[in-house]
Image 1 (cartoon, helix red, strand yellow):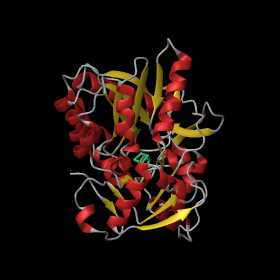
Image 2 (cartoon, rainbow, N blue to C red; image 1 turned 90 degrees about the vertical axis):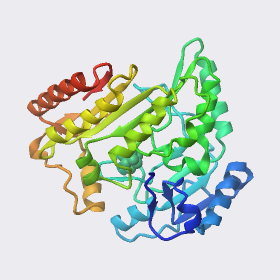
Image 3 (cartoon, helix red, strand yellow; image 1 turned 60 degrees about the vertical axis):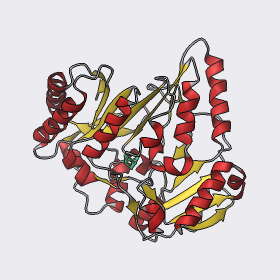
Image 4 (cartoon, rainbow, N blue to C red; image 1 turned 180 degrees about the horizontal axis):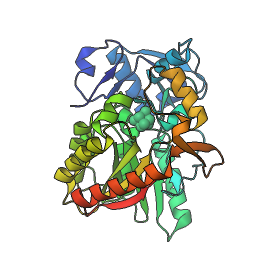
Amino acid sequence: MVQVIRDKPTNQNVADKGIFPFVPVRAFFEQEALEYPVGRKIYDTLKDMGIETKFTGSHNRISGIPGKTAREAYHEGKRTLVVGVRKTLDFQTCKPSAHFQLPLVTGCPGRCQYCYLNTTMGKKPYIRVYVNVEQILDQARQYINSRLPETTVFEGAATSDPLAVEPYTGSLAETISFFGRQGKAKFRFVTKFTNVDSLLKLNHRGNTRFRFSINAQSVITAYESGAPGLNQRLEAASKVAEAGYPLGFIIAPVILDEGWQEEYSQMFARLGRLFGAYQHLTLEIITHRFTPKAKQIIRDVFPETSLPMDEEQRKFKYGQFGYGKYVYRPQEMDQVKNFITDMIHENIPEAKIEYLI
Ligand code: SF4
């Protein structure tokens, strides 16, 4: 079952169909967005659901989201959907995993305490969807053509979890079908959400790699509010594998809370039972790290957090983008790397480890 994130009762008949993992409390539309069929469809759907809808001059400047404290502002932002037209069609680069970001959605209704978006989305992190998908894909085609005969790779989740809003937009389906028609391009995205059914029958031709972000269930319970549980994500991943998509898992952040070996053993055992024989699985594994800025924001928004962020217990390391972060100490890193590598060899020996950092 898809978990429905709902903060206020809405039209039960629509929301309880289970196809909406996210039901906002309010939505803002750029007037121009209604000139696109998908913009009109989202507007009508939200109206049917009884969601408060307003208009805004620009999807970049939204006023009218309540929230006096950092905590209120964060949660009200996460309850807000903004529907607009993407004007900037220059794609950001996305090294090293892809050549370009593909901007379909910005933000995510999940409320993971450690989320990288906490430091990039402002105090009211609303979810923004773009209705001019055709134009965005036309632009992708130009990037693809400009790099021929090389293959160009696009990342669809650099600043979002695009699956969470897919029932409103259908833009992932359109994008996957688009890449299915390309000879020299690949698409990839990562998600914690599980509403994959509308994507299973698409003619993807192996050009889209689905990656699920998973973790030990104890980490999900403690820190990943608003996202489906491990079993649900693995069930969705099984469907995706059966549909012939290339599949991968991001295991992040690996957190060394008490009993972590047992927790991660269980997670890898489940992965092994489901995907032990799967041939083309990729794994990306990232241990927990935090910046001073992220720690401050997490403390403000989640004052009760138990996320381990004691600088004394970490090593300070300068990152490639010039700012520093606190990572686990070398001895712990060695322990984690050895443990996880052993678990992978034992449970999913065919999987390819893309990186373990
Ligand atoms: Fe952030 Fe991913 Fe959690 Fe969404 S699901 S809040 S993008 S970590």
